[in-house]
Amino acid sequence: MLQDLKKKVLEANLELPKRDLVIYTWGNVSAIDRDTGLVVIKPSGVAYEDLKAEELPVLDLEGNQVEGRLKPSSDTITHILLYQAFPEIGGVVHTHSPWCTVWAQAGKAIPSLGTTHADYFYGEIPITRKLTKEEINHNYEKNTGEVIIETFEDKNPSYMPGVLVNNHGPFNWGKTPQEAVSNAVIMEEIAKLAYYTQSLTDAVKPIDNSLLDKHFLRKNGNDSYYGQVTK
Ligand SMILES: O=C(CO)[C@@H](O)[C@@H](O)COP(=O)(O)O
Image (cartoon, rainbow, N blue to C red; front, top):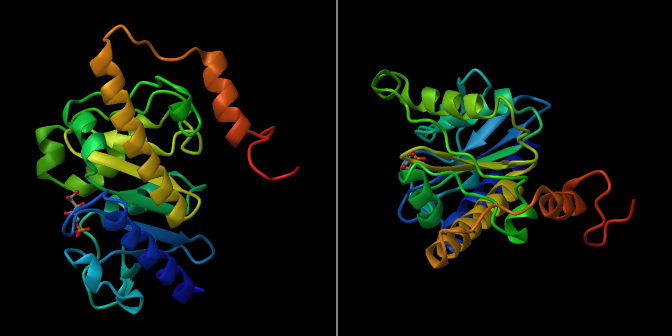
């Protein structure tokens, strides 16, 4: 079981440079085995081409490393806090993908300007508040997780599988590490589309709720009819 999860986490991490979401050692993907509460994550600062499944660090939900000699990602506590707060997720990814990072650096949420957005994110993709100096100087990665959870007090992570951390970059999640990475790729494309849409006209407004509902719920709701899945 854990070996399979390590293989899945390796494959998901290797998808990041393949999809041009990261350069060098930026970014990280993790997964959780909900039966054991064990989290597998990318080791910190290791080149993607040097990653090996059997060397991936394993931690428990309290953040104690239980396997692996390599130090876990510097963002590990952020991932763990999200697993604690969002029981429905199984994978988390953090990158500095260019288009999402542009919106995060500008401190702007990504408005839902079209059906491409609405197919995957049920409304505006939120931006967290800025961290205070105190939060930056003490327990930075923990506070990064806390500010995401604070931003989601009134949001359903299954309906909004991503967030922009102010001045920093995107975090995404999903039922699996593969789904988390897909959501990161899709959010990066949506960030680019929104940027260019707004560059054509600043009069553009978010789509009506009726169109948002139609597109999101036909793919994601209990009455979804998209694709080949039959009820
Ligand atoms: O840039 C950041 C800090 O958010 C990280 O994503 C990036 O450096 C990757 O760090 P790790 O190698 O996962 O420790």
